[in-house]
Amino acid sequence: MDVEREIWEIKMRASPDVRGRARATVITLLTDFGHRDPYVGIMKGVILGINPQARLVDLTHHIEPQAIPQAALALRTAWRHFPRGTVHLCVVDPGVGSGRAPVALSAGGHLFVGPDNGVFTSVLDRYPGGAVHRIEAEAYRLPDVSQTFHGRDIFAPAAAWLSLGVPISAMGAPLIAPVRLMFPAPRQEANDWYGEVLYIDTYGNLVTNLPATLIPDDRTWEVSLGGQSVPGHRTYSDVQSGALVAVVGSFECVEIACNGGSARERLGLGQGTPVRMVLSSLEDDRSPMVESLKVEMLSVPIR
Image (cartoon, rainbow, N blue to C red; front, side, top):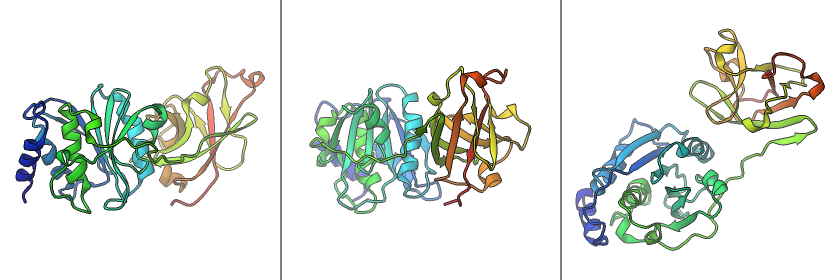
């Protein structure tokens, strides 16, 4: 059965109050598919066949293959910048075809569609009362569901129907205990904060799990361990070209960068690298460089 025929049959089975009702709802797409293969385009075709007025936005399709934590971090950074009512479609799904549940989630005025594998951890942490439902109703899937491409057969149709106003409860039964990832939390000892590198972006910036909120406006931060020290500044260009710098980046966390280069290549460090920050005492805060920050990384191999 071809996809056009499948979509037509779904529309005929759908509730009369949503048949033919196109809406210019924003649907974001986040996958690990890349752009070499036609998978992203196929999902977009399924969505537009159901809601031809949908506004499709590519968050990224370059999550490392099967890297669920990386996808969860990317989603955490992005989704709050979209208007209420946006549908966020996330397909990083190494468990496709297994017993993991396909789910739809409603939280914070947004809707989320994807596998129940922890990719929505940050949303569930922010909105623990969010409604999570299994995607079970045949009316909102393609009729022939494969065991290897649920992005096309389950998630894309569900996102499209939700964009037309189908209530999340129509998708299926509630899911009581969705899967959550256990991200390492920053740890404090006296004036020291311990964390680690969670993510490395395209520029080679080492993004840590140390949030900006750990840096008070009236205190300075500095390194208290040996090894490579990196001064903290407001932005990358506060240091010379080629120099290392620690800043609060787009992930709203401390990241280590190289002005005009790659911190990853410069330092030979990767995900899992321990990071230590030290909060200076108020007595020591006599320097005009109130925003000074130094971060020291304990060398571990790139993984």
